[in-house]
Length: 413
Image 1 (cartoon, helix red, strand yellow):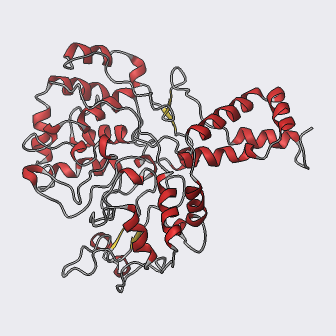
Image 2 (image 1 turned 30 degrees about the vertical axis):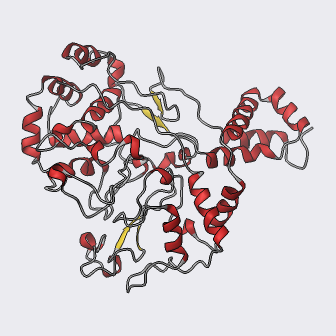
Image 3 (image 1 turned 90 degrees about the horizontal axis):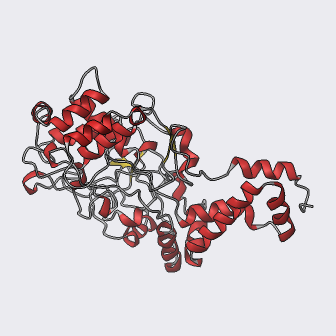
């Protein structure tokens, strides 16, 4: 018999409610982003031909709206996914967005794409302090990550774009970034047959427009999600960790699917272990004393809010961040909370890229930020011991999961 006072039925129900997602994409029209091999682009090798595009577009399944499932960890935020009702995801739209994301023809001189500042090999960010646009121009802010945007509405450090669709087309006409105009960019893409075919099929009422460019890129970006991290595996396994052998034997007999999940998680924890330092760091991260979860909260470890940390406020003419959009006094110097997921891959840090390492970031919080009239009341000195600082960094590193496999090649000619 299962031990303790928990009845067998209640225990099995609890396990079933928290079961991890398994790949179900296919005839059920479910896109399981928990399978990092899911991505289905136009088949073929070498240059992308118009005949290949026509064949791809002729298949009804590529135009079927998809229900999205998120990976373990992020799946806790599935009820908070953004933009899917207004901009349903289909394989054809996602693939069009992939092409646009990597196409330098979005820029005025054909040198800059979305990936130039949000590159897969650099944590879908860039390892430069600020973004670099056409003619080598440097922006004033660090390139935000483009992953896990499916859980986010307002975009950019100051939240000036109210949707991922609006964000996707903003850099095109920014003189420092892509240096184009929407009109000229659209005019150029109307001359590329492979793009025209896709836009007309996917958006039959309007074809190639700047709004549809934004919809396609946003659909692709919503597929860029972090896979489970050591932290996620460890957390999910906890509900099995206290069961004894006879409990597991009964589980194996009465609920083989849940037992299979137990075995899967057991292997995942063994293959993706958290160090003792990371486990101590986890306790600190979630503690009231350190208070990281005052801002880094939820499935994506980000509250989607704006906070003044004091970064850059000592400058003669500081970047006022969110205030430039709201004109609300308390928003001066406030910037959007970034996710802690895969943060180890996306340095340098802060809105201005002024901190090269996570160790510097922890030390900034440890000393209570930089004093200024608008400093967030959540920022207070932490008085961490040296080992505690190390442990916090190790925990953040344990929040690293794989990215989906995405090809940057094969664009319309």
